[in-house]
Amino acid sequence: MSTQHLSEQEIIRREKLTELKKLGIDAYPAPLYPVNATSVYIKENYKGEENKADFADVCLAGRIMSVRDMGKANFAVIQDAVGKIQLYIKQDDICPGEDKTMFQTVWKKLLDLGDIIGIKGYVFTTKTGETSVHVKEFTLLSKSLKPLPVVREKEGETFDEVTDPEFRYRQRYADLIVNPGVKETFIKRTKMVNAIREFLNERGALEVDTPVLQSIPGGAAARPFTTHHNALDVPMYMRIANELYLKRLIVGGFEWVYEFSRNFRNEGMDRTHNPEFTVLEFYVAYKDYEWMMDTTEQMLEKAALATNGATKVVVGDKEIDFKAPYKRITMYDAIKEYTGFDISEMDEAGIRNVCKELKIHADEKWGKGKLIDEIFGSKCEGNYIQPTFITDYPVEMSPLTKKHRSKPGLVERFELMCNGKEIANAYSELNDPLEQRERFEEQVKLMERGDDEAMFIDHDFLRALEYGMPPTSGIGFGIDRIAMLLTNQHSIQDVLFFPMMRPENME
Image (cartoon, rainbow, N blue to C red):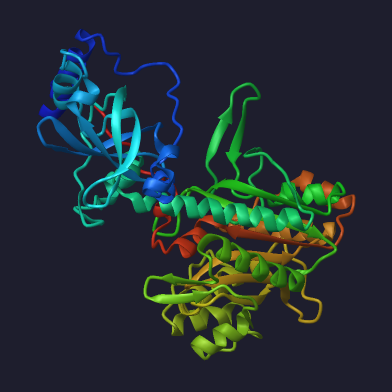
């Protein structure tokens, strides 16, 4: 075994593994371990004399987090999936006969912090009033060959918490062991997703699956990841959105479909962007974007309640309230409010001039839609802290959206802003196949101008629309961003178990 890259601690632990083998102890045993209790269950339900008979024979398993050696008796703390509990281990209980190896050698010399053990015993209360387990026997279930990062605790407070993000995101498994709050964030995320599923299922929506590997990346403006299918010898793309597939299902006769979609965009990484992220999209026949605003605020109110037990959440130094209803303002009014410019009647040249006056970069390759998007993004978006619907976007910004019923040049679209970021995007969907073809062709012209986020033409999607799609409203939610808000995390990496990292050199 090569030891040149091992630390002294790691070498010592491997030597202990060899010693255990010599004693005939398997450090990685195969049989099921008959766990019948958890740390939290014991602490919450043990009432001392009145029910100690119910706790006379408990079996737990967990990781050794600390040991206090008092000679022939030790105190230790183990951590299981839900929390920690103190153990009391006495030499004469573990080794009632002459042979004291199991206590003096195995327990005291060959086990380390981080090792996973199983214990059997009974619950009691120590003189200091701490609910603990008096151990009758222990079993090594997994030897830890790498020392845990050191975290000191005193009176329930954590010191030396491991905060280095490079370590925490790359070795999330170790982060979860030593930083208990991290697990809580991910449990909340799952509660949030479950509440959203429940909300949709109760209303008759059907959860579906659509392709992640696509021959045409459609449904959004973004750069795709490209790969190659060997058997068919064709380029393939990881999906940037699932929109066009879900709309095909509406054509096929489903009335309300949804999918939690893992999407991939070959773009930068920052505190609100990871190249792989989760979007919830749903599409509902015979509805419009007004109905969708009402549904969205009800769904997010329910999600907030399920995650935190309240509609109000603290995000950094702000309090955000997800209780419906939310404020609504048109995009042009928002731009007017924060820049003083009314751009509603301007052409591309006029809007370029506004960008110049506002000192906003206006690339030659960009059309009118992208310029308006830049103005809104740099001057307005950051001001919307409470959930706010921004409505009625210019047609150039929204190639898949139905034209506004009463405002020429606009479309029936909204984005939901919260804490200065977009968390949802919704339309009254464009269902006129001839107009959709024209809008796709406009996108191709933008692509030819050099816009690498413009949309591809999806001819099969156009064919589907030609069979007739009912009037439909659709929406996409950034699940990771909503999770950030509901768990008070400032970076998307903190709500993804394994965020994208630069590959490590393991040589």
